[in-house]
Length: 371
Image 1 (cartoon, helix red, strand yellow):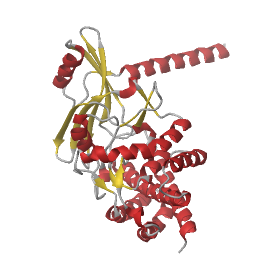
Image 2 (cartoon, helix red, strand yellow):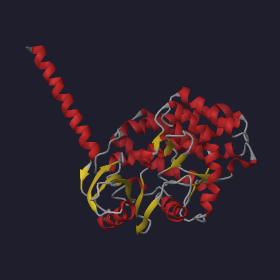
Image 3 (cartoon, helix red, strand yellow):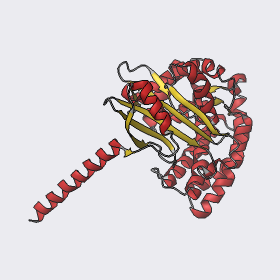
Image 4 (cartoon, one colour):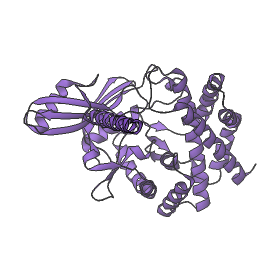
């Protein structure tokens, strides 16, 4: 009897999980807050030739209360259309970590999607609606849902493939960025690096008063050295400090690979786009990768980008990895301390892991270039 009861309990749990997963995939009935139902009705008529009958939505963002939604639209003629709605808000209430950061994410995406998106680009999804609701704080988008024809990079082979394609993708960014004439794009220059060190020192000091951590303390101890370390790296070669167009958040969930060909790539989430070291995008791609995958991906990138030696690539990659980890650790430390909404991320683990990565990269660079 006990075994049968246990089996019935397991079957019930599985049924509950299937129902929950099915409900999640269907989404909630109605239009999410901030999205114009009038606009959706117009798009339904335009794209499907029939009035809108029903909309369901599913929240996609991992740690933002607003963010992106998948919209599943059903027309009266029974045809379906799936779109992505993004309500991107960058207020202190929504993202407390922006206070004092010194750069403003969000504006780059509006510039890229608003200008370049109108003319189309092989790197971008189709853009049907792009509005700045509040200057530098709130943007509203309706975009093509790429999930039918494209897929996220979801395994180690995809990550290595994207690393090898990154130089080609970077080569296409100057033409894309020329359409926005630099408006809103972030400059990841010396001022950014110096400001980031100051920002991190303040935020991580506040963090450890609430959540003591030896990993965070280790990172805090090297922050005063980062400015001089960057200078040493950039002095290794005259063109190391040349800023080039980058995506700024080139992680595997923001790169969509064409399902049929396996070659076409589209990029989403341009919130952090600007001018910086190309290796910064490589560091974003590999920040959650195993050591083995990092090495394979770095080798693929080096083969595709011969303008630096292997040693120079490793040096620039470790610096970019260090700087990205400092940004992640400090930014997410504020979100953990101040955010008022639940997130799907374990922010405490993210802060400690990023701190550990930054400290490890710092030690590696010190060994390579010495005093």
